[in-house]
Image (tube, rainbow, N blue to C red; front, side, top):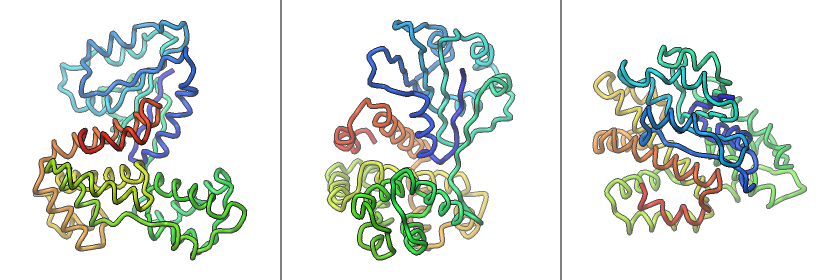
Length: 316
């Protein structure tokens, strides 16, 4: 079995990934996570053709590997498609991409004929409000909670399309009023959004290796009830916006860029623009990938949230 999970909606993608990986507490579980930056073509071939020591299905999770292959030179990764076709049947390959990939690329043409594809993108632009609203309504049954129309609208107003953050808040709200309908006033009391200005400052302090200030800001977020996942999602969102702006600089004027990334606040846009010009694109991409590694580490049970929070400043 070969699966592809891609798109910028990491929350939905990771829920799908969790379903595929199953119970990771069993001793016989054989799950391996491999990051593309440290993987060669020969290393990939060897991994795919190695059988499980436990006699069970072996799951290999490759992070952002297809992005690497698609952008590689013509003479590289020539055997990729054939290796996937001829892999041992007991080995299950899962390709997890943190953004939507070009599925029509000739580099992965035969692979795409084999793969079970799951595309998850966050809603943006026209119609996004209704899509987020419908998503929140679909989570009500999962968390055994009921929100009024006004409460749903207020939640979207405060958080936007950050599904992970919204889901965490729904869990908090279900504990706050387990058998009562959630009203707008409850959202205003319980949901404390992370200020964009604080996230910008945290990115600055992390990139400048100001460990003291970074720890100070993270501790402030935690004291205000924010989890690692909330902090991670806000950081990831801002980093992606900065990377997009870096790609657009020189090709569009500032007003066009602001419209393309759909940031209405001039303060927020100017801060994103400043950081896009201040730091290199490679540094931003590396920081985003390290953030994804930390998140995946929690989701597969490698590390606890408390351990990750201690490492956050030093790893980024």
